[in-house]
Image (cartoon, rainbow, N blue to C red; front, side, top):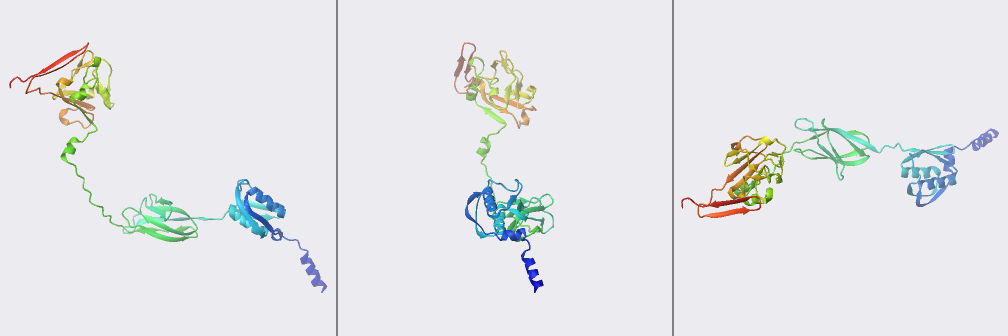
Length: 339
């Protein structure tokens, strides 16, 4: 009997482990919003256990809602660690907090291919149904989709193939090869029609057309109206300088342009040192400036062609027009020679 009593007393006087000591506490913290630092200090006051952790693991001033009633130290730390996504261990009178190593992300990977031929599908879509998450396969038809653990519905699609949905239970890294069945796409019939009048009146970006009234609004020296100095007001055209009839079109050289009057090229379309143009509204019927897509019948200039058509004259009655200013006067008279 003495031996049994001695063993009993020896067992009773054995020191408690840190875990056993922690479970002997009854911790109650009223539910409230507090900083992490305040919660840790409250646990230390109730248990006399100190906390040790790296500042990168835990933010002391983070505000959380926490509360517990009549719980042991391990239960309190378990609830707190789940809420802060950290891990804990108790060594003697120290509670060591570390970053949680719990894995909650897995990789779903595989190859997408054509079911009929086995060819890989490049840039095929892999999407998580009910969310905006998705990705495309690389040049080898491979995809690697990070997903959280649980049930997910994946949608695989590619242009010209039937869409495929799969429900997967993600509990580990998973390899899933998918083959899609080709599908013919019936497109509706589309008819594009354009009337002949619309074709004739359609604006060409590389072509400008001027009427005599528009030419009359282009100012030149001393208020005169003419073509040469007015060309710089058009997009893509720039004059060489005052006193010159040369101009540039879309960055080309000055010798890459030509001015044609009734299919005859002219080389000096101005006088008075370039301040006055020979092309005036009175004898002009139409002016076309080609900056691209030049007609082959008008020559081989690279930058631009200015085509001028002159008036035929009034074949029914006599008419008179003119312009008078302090510097230049001009008069024009039209009459039929034979009625």
